[in-house]
Image (tube, rainbow, N blue to C red; front, side, top):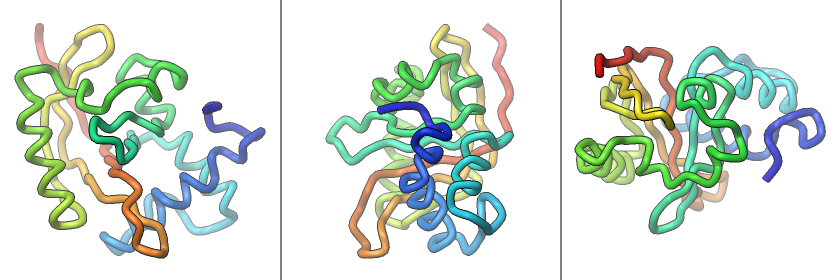
Length: 156
């Protein structure tokens, strides 16, 4: 899968799924209304982190905007091969699983805080994250996504 860009309209279809699911569940918009390709570009280039994973039994990331790639220290081609559970260190994976189970039941949660880890092993705490289920207009489950703009690196 090629990184979002002009050649694939910034993954407009997937961006629309992210944006529509978020709006349906929270009543808020992640990016301003407008042309679908411009909204997809705005999401990819946003100052806040947005990631999503697929519906596999061990979900793999299928989207990471530029802020996420920078924070997690991975380029697009690397990011979309990583099981999302690996975004948390081994001691934090059970907390992450409980969070995702709660999102599955409730549709979304906001004000989530948790510890995540970069590719090089640096830990950081995310604050005020929103995690939500992805579903098309037909209600078909399509994975989960997260958005946050607050994080603090932890001392080693």
